[in-house]
View 1 (cartoon, rainbow, N blue to C red):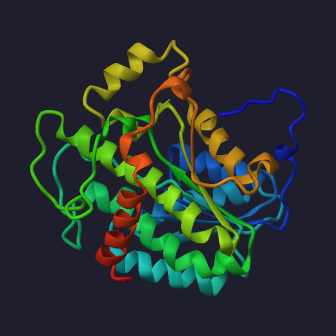
View 2: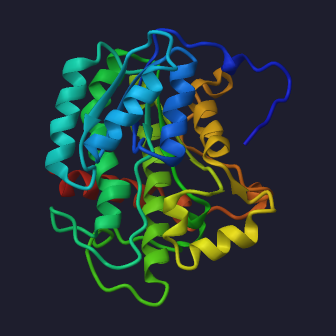
View 3: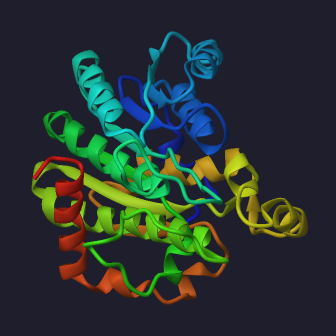
Length: 300
């Protein structure tokens, strides 16, 4: 991702901007919400744990100089929860300028969501996909609007994705959890590309990014995650949650990204030299994944 070390216009206040952020009780999501609030944005955040969410709301509201900070409770892996919270958000928000799909998980063992999907795919892709589609009309009325997808460099390891079976639950092999996580992050990237094709005329853009290996609970849930963080902690590969959030804030607010859509940006040094994942060249696969996702969440 581009860096500018002079006085950056995107760091200005954004009073009156309305933002939704998912997964905000800790880590990157909390720091993204904090960065938006400190710049004067009104923030509605979605989290699973109501008690932790209320504590975060009080903390952020105290830093917001009168900006509106609201907590909405939902488990994004549960489609009924997503539908309910989308309705609550649409009823409450007068407009929506920025949607940050940050909520995510890494399940070391197979788990099935309430709707019968692999829970990691449900949390990382299907829930955000449904929420984004249900908020699209509000974003269109507020255009220009931006969507930010928190993805991962791990998506590059996925050589193919089957639109028919990508959400099916099943046994994980020795590195199966990593493979499913990588697939879920590829789905985030493909979703941004498809939004660029389908919704640009609506004034809605979407970009995905990798925050790097961030020292959060999610990273520690990776196989040998605690060891990996310890070994890499003295390298540029590991970022604090605040550093990871910086890239999301740039995509959400920086005027240089106005009108840009369908991109993938990385904070990992040298990542721009790596080859893109093969499915990113397949518009037919991207379209098929989108259409299948519509079917799975009941929007087709």
